Length: 162
Image (cartoon, rainbow, N blue to C red; front, side):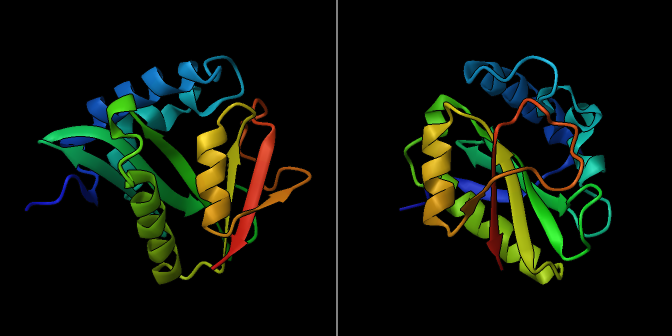
């Protein structure tokens, strides 16, 4: 039996689908205003943004359709051994399939391969399912943000050693 979903590196042809997913999912959780990743310039050109050194972005594909994504990149204005788990969003049809677990595993493995020793992430109150997955993967809460992502709308921060 073929796998239910596929995780693969982003390609230029995926940019529009990933941007649409980000713009659909973030407001679902109250993250559509200022201070959230939905307004980052890279949203419309994710392939190019993650082609930079020590960066990687993966898409979640099911039945030939991109239904989610997630990536890692150096933490903006952070220490050189810290990456950030970034822009991990899934459409509703991707949830509950084990795809979140698989995507985090892929991203953390890639972060190790890229030489990072710690992985940071930002999220917000209300994204409870995501926070549960992060905790299962060894992320622990922080009291304040790290680096300078510009995402002042986020109010939950996590870190884990790689």
